[in-house]
Amino acid sequence: MRHLGVLARIQLNDDEVTRLTGQLDAIVDNIAKVSEVATADIVATSHPIPLSNVFRPDVVGETLTHEQVLQNAPDAADGRFRVTAILGEEQ
Figure 1 (cartoon, rainbow, N blue to C red):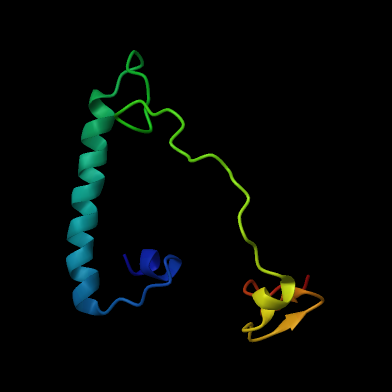
Figure 2 (cartoon, rainbow, N blue to C red):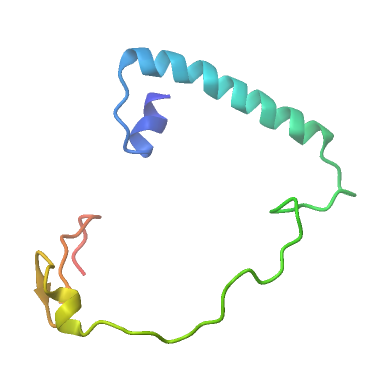
């Protein structure tokens, strides 16, 4: 459980690890139960209700200029936001 916390970048104390370990066991058990009843003749679904296009029409509205977008940025360069590398790799 502590390893999952590290992967999720969540610091867990000992009490949380103990409590969440039991919950993780229950989740894994429930997934196993679903896997037991899942058969090839049941089509996989991502949503229980069929959906059609639920998006509004794409209409161009007022937009900000580059200057307006970058005016409150902590750091900008060449018309873009400048951020520190998060993976420790140079680009």
